Amino acid sequence: MPVAKWNGTVLAKSDTYETVEGNIYFPPDSLVREHFKPSATHTTCPWKGEASYYSVEVDGKTNADAAWYYPEPKPAASNIQGHVAFWKGVTVER
Image (cartoon, rainbow, N blue to C red; front, side, top):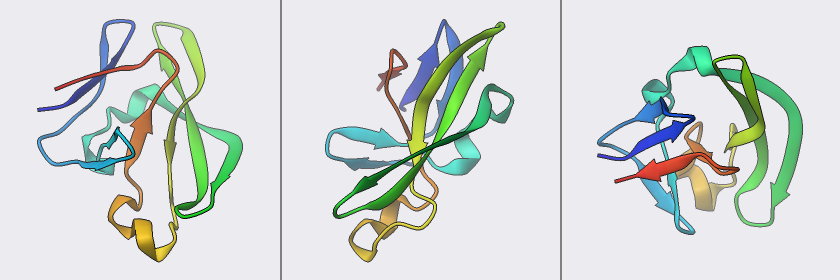
């Protein structure tokens, strides 16, 4: 079961997930919401669409834009709608 952690704290854990381009995308209900703060950052992927970001906060420390998701992906990526993936030092263990 994949688990996402940062600074020793679990951010997400789920036995259901999607894998796209080597990244594990966790379903929205698997997130420990208290650690997620919306970010104003957006990027665009040619085939997935516009990504939105969350900053992750643990024990008073912030990892800016460490999580991303596609609220309204293009049809080819509809399986990851709302799912969250991580980077910037967040570890994902299987």
